[in-house]
Length: 76
Image 1 (cartoon, rainbow, N blue to C red):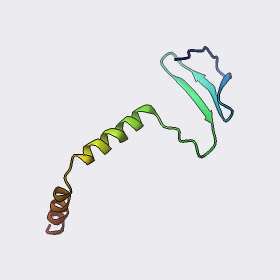
Image 2 (cartoon, rainbow, N blue to C red):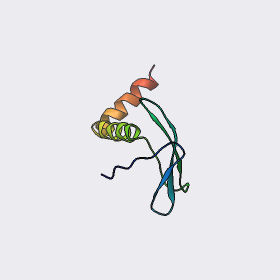
Image 3 (cartoon, one colour):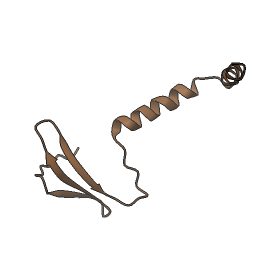
């Protein structure tokens, strides 16, 4: 892991296309600005972890169980 120090208003580059600027510094948080091409997906780590957990949980549901759930909703 690379660790660097930056002050508010300073930036660093990731490759040739991504620039990360330090916008604000607080006692417990940092506000970042990210400039990147639209085709580069930028997600908070916890969002990706939640999506992965959801996919795993959905994969555990058998297709016939999904059909049963659909049918039970239709009869309500």
